[in-house]
Length: 327
Image 1 (spheres, helix red, strand yellow):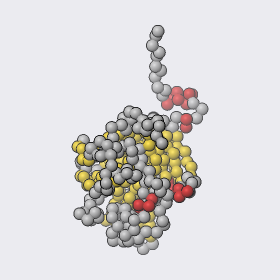
Image 2 (spheres, one colour):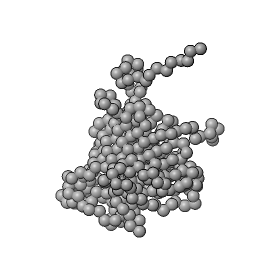
Image 3 (cartoon, one colour):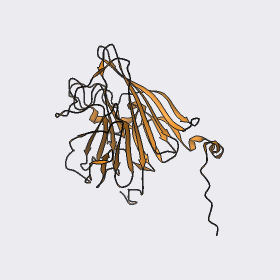
Image 4 (tube, helix red, strand yellow):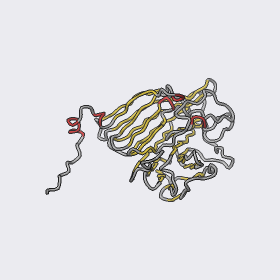
């Protein structure tokens, strides 16, 4: 018998003739969550057509909620769901913990880390509803993309605030996504711009033997399956230029690559108690003092943007981690 010839993959030119709608291949679809505490959260469902699927919740700060790679969910999910926290927060406030969950929670921009000086845990920006400016599929570029863009504003009369413009894009047919943020001070007075990107990974990215490396050097692990208490955060200095943090659980692998011009540190945190199981990778713009609070940050003039860029790269899903008879 003659071996069956394998046809070359279609080009973007021929692809239009092979499908009725290009959204069969890759798409961004807009919907609103409607159940329980998540009700009313505006959401975008991304599918790259290359095995990478994720949700962007415009109603929760343009953050990333779910993220699956070749059918395996990798983002940590909170029992509270993708809810909105209470509208008010003050000194010592930890309402972040009541809405914490999903693949990415963006922290800042007036503060990150422990409550201090009238600022709540991880600042005023987390979970702020954003205005969605555009989204969709762009096939007419050298690198066809699925994308979205939006803005959120955190502001108070007499206190100033910050504006975030975010673009999330992912190559069609690919296994990567890119986050490009610009943040500026709004109001009459200079103020710091602080950012911490709280990426939250769940099983099977964390399991017994998982290792985390920064720029090719293992900095955490091999991890046990469970631990009796949450681990203390650790802070690591990234290499100048571009840093790469890789999380390898023996199956799916995720790597984070970012510019250290504005995110020179990596913070790691985990809670591997039974029933928790979260592993957090946190590129950040500011160091941490011994008491867990921020070090000092310079003030920025209003209207002068600071740019943060992070790329997420998925690879090496070998076998499905869930047994067929799971209950």
